[in-house]
Amino acid sequence: MLALTGVTKTYGDGVGRVTALDDVSLHVEAGGFVAVCGPSGSGKSTLLNIIGLLDKPDAGDVSLGGERVVLAGRAEAARLRNRLIGFVFQSFQLLPRLTAWENVALPLFHRGLGRAERRAKALAALDKVGLSDRAAHRPDALSGGQRQRVALARALVGEPALVLADEPTGSLDSVSAGAALDLLRDVNERLGVTIVMVTHDREAAARCDRTINIRDGRVAGEAA
Amino acid sequence: MRAGPPPAALALEALTNLRGQGARSLLALLGIVIGAAAIVALTNLGHVAQAETLKRFEQMGVDMLVLRGIPAGEGPVRLDRETIERLPASDPDVVEATPLAIGRDGVRPLNRRQVAEEDAMIVAVTPAIFPVAGLDVARGRALGPFDACVPVAVAGSVVARDLTAGQAVLEPGERLSLAGYVFTLVGVLEPAPLEALSPVDYDRSILIPLSCARRALAAGDPTVALVRLQPEADPDRTGPRLAAALGNATATVSVRSAREMIAAMKRQTGLIARLLAGIGGISLVVGGIGVLNVMLMSVMERRREIGLRAALGATPADIRTLFAIEAAILSLGGGTLGAALGMSVTVLFSLLSGWDYVAAWWIPMLGPAVAVLVGGAFGLYPAFAAARVDPIEALRAE
Ligand SMILES: Nc1ncnc2c1ncn2[C@@H]1O[C@H](COP(=O)(O)OP(=O)(O)OP(=O)(O)O)[C@@H](O)[C@H]1O
Ligand SMILES: [Mg+2]
Image (cartoon, rainbow over all chains, first blue to last red; front, side, top):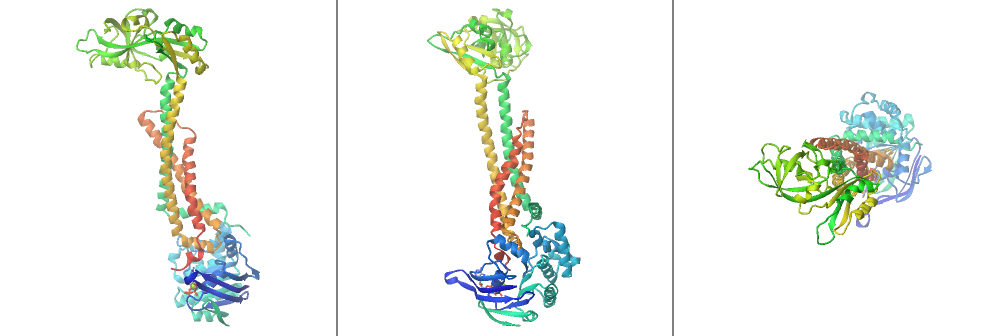
C-alpha cells in the first residue's frame, strides 16, 4: 500500500541545519494499522507530511497504492490527497463557522461535488462515527471527543484508501481517546482502510497491528 | 477524476465567506462605494457643467459670426453699413446681417433730478439686431424701420434699473439725456444672457438707431457686424470671404464664429471634467487599497482555513479563485452601489443649482468598470498570497 525508500528530509542550512528524516525506508501493507512512535522532535510529523504529499522529500521515493508518486506540482499533489488520503489532526482543525456536516463535506467541495451529494455523503459519514444527531451543530457546540469524531468523519467521507492521523488522541481525555481509537480500529477492520497514526501514547500504540519507532530521524525498530 | 469545484460553487463559497466577515466586508465595500460614487458623481458633474456652459453658447445659435473691424491706419474704423445690410442678398450663405456702432457715454433721465448720470454702452443698431441677437423687449417696443433718424432709445435691463436709483421703474415715454441730446425711451429689454461671442453686453447698453449714431457717438460708422449663416454653411470658408468683402481702407476685419468658440469651450470644460474624474479616480484608488487591506487581513486570519482546505485537496488555483472572487464581489458590488449613489448626488446637485441634469450612457458604467479594474489590481495580490500558504505551517498546532 505504502512504501518509503531512502527518504531524507533536512530543514535549514549552515549551523541551523536539521536532519528531520535520515534515509528512512518502510513499508505498510494495505489494510494495515500502524503506529509511529518516538520522542518529540524525532521526525514523526515530518514523516507523516511526506507520506501525505504535503511535503516533498529531499531524496528517496514514496509509493502509494503500488505506484511511485512523482509530484509534478502542488495542484497534482492536492488532487491526489483529495482522492487517496484522509487526514486527522491533533487539534481537530474544524472550521468554526461551518456546521458539523459542512465541515465533513469540505473535501467533497474541493472534489467538485454538488451540494446535495456532499450533504448526503457527509451525513452518511457522520452516521458512521455515531454523530448523525449533531450534523447541524457548529464545532463550539461539540465536546472534544465529538469534534475528533467529526474530524474522523471528514477524513473518511471521500472514501480514501489511507488515513493519516497525527496524534489524534493528543487533545483528548482518556475516555474520549479510547472511543476515538475504537473508532479508528473499527474503520480499519470494517472498511479496510490503511491507517498510519503518530502517537506518544504507549497504550494507543499497543492497539495497532504494529509500531514503527523513530529516533533522530531514523527508523529505530519495529514491534508487532 | 474531476477537476475541482466549478466557479459557481466557488462564488457561492466566496459570498458565504464575505458574509461571515460581517463588518469588515462592509467597510471594504464602503471604501469602494465611496470611491466609485466620487468618480461617477464628479464625472457626471463635469458633464452637467459642460452641457450647461454649452447651452449658453448654443442659445445664440451655432451659426453666428462676429465680424469686427480692426483699425488699419490712424483713423477710426468705418465699415460700410450698406455692404453689411446687403450681405443676405449678396452672399448665399448669409441669412441675416446687422451692423453695430459702439461707444460709451453718460446717460441720465431728464425728469429725475435725484438720479446721477450713469455711464453706459451706447450701441447704434439697425432693427435686425433684435432677431439676430435674440433680444426681447420687456416693456414698450423695439426699434423699427421707421426710427431711421428719430432720437429714440431702448435700454438694457441693468441700465434701466440703475437709472431709477431704486425708485419707480423706467417707463417708455421718459426722456433721456444722452451725449447732450435728448432721446425718448421707447422700450426696455428683457435680461439677455451674456454670451461669450457677443460684442456687446446688452443688459448694460442703450440701443439707438444707427442712423442717429453720428449724433450720440464720436464715430458713427459701424465697427462690428453680426451675421447669421445658413445652417449648412461652413463658417471656416464663409468667414474669410465676408471679412474680405467688408474690409476697406480704414479696417481689416477679424472673424469669430460661434462654432469655433463652442469647440474651444468644449475643450476647456472637457479638461475640467477630466480633472474632476481624476480626483474621483484617486478616491477610488484609496478604496482599492481598502480592498487590498481587507483581503490581506482576511488571508492572514484565515491562514489555518486555507491550509486546511489545501490539505484536504484544494489546489492553489482553487484557493486563488476563491479569494479573487471575494475581491471581485466587493469591487463589483461596491462599484454598482457607488454608481447609483454618485448619480443620485449629481441629480440632487443639479436640482439644487437649477441646472439641467444630463448623463451619458457610459457614466454609470464608469463606477463598476473602474472599480473592477482597481479591485482586480488590488485583489489579485491577496489571492496569490492565499494560494502560496503552506498547509504544514498553517496547520501546525500553536
Ligand atoms: N519547517 C521546519 N523548519 C525547520 N525545522 C523543522 C521544520 N519542521 C520540523 N523541523 C525540525 O525537524 C525535526 C523533526 O520535527 P517533527 O515535527 O517531525 O517532530 P515530531 O516527531 O513530530 O515531534 P513532536 O512529537 O514534538 O510533534 C525537529 O527537530 C524540528 O525542529
Ligand atoms: Mg509532531
